[in-house]
Image (cartoon, rainbow, N blue to C red; front, side, top):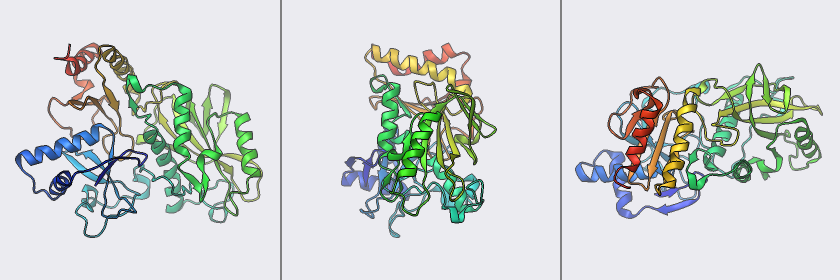
Length: 396
């Protein structure tokens, strides 16, 4: 078993003792100190924003993440949907999703997409319905969902869901990180997404992308398409609005929402850019996926609009604690179906605090001093003092 970054880079291989510990954990055979050790190991992996890669099939590397069961408040290992299957004899083959009913396509959560695997974000013209590029089948819906999965994977792999004062990047650097990650994801075989990605949504850059796609021989007989990525003001009535166009830009397909709820901008938006029908030389936006972000200069994901004020306070507080010599890292999981409304704050791995900033819980929540809900505090100032005290107490 290995600990890996979200971009699949190796952090380290578990020791044989740690490997035995995790095997006992998933089999439910641990008690007392050994169960505590296993939980501490998993908590460190979760707090660092890392994943686990199982070596039951070394070439395929099935991926697992450390998740929190909102009903019991306990940690468990969850197989990442869309990644390789485990060996049939592997003890890590099962996870809690198997106990539930099969999920239909519309309710499938976004999944982490493995790098170096063709994305195939849009169907070929022979499969599509004229005029929209949609055929309405389960396959087409999965292709649409992969656009949101790609946007969330780019956010995770580029570290935009992590905030720390010493890791802060300006706007140019954040877009550069996104483009760098996109280079690992081919649109089709041997066609990196970064080759046909524009990070500014305006008519000039749409025409530039159209020219590159039109003149390209890399797509062969496949449908030509590229990607537009930008921070926009709002998306409504099949239009994307930003500060560079009062009239907005039309899109023909679906708007895929992170968390399933419309949230005011700014939004980080990713759109497919392609002809809608075979033989057409008119390129247009097809499907659009979006994730609310903290500001136009800071692409930290926001789950609901009510989070913005306390999130800005937490960013300011983390900067203040850094000036006092205490480095606190704030992470938000964005991929999966659980825990997206939870922030994980950690300092030097010795103190970890989970926080929910939404007004209404999504389900039962763990109890204890390491989980707090902002809505339970009387004011933002009271909440700020609690978080500051949690990490600063005994250090000054």
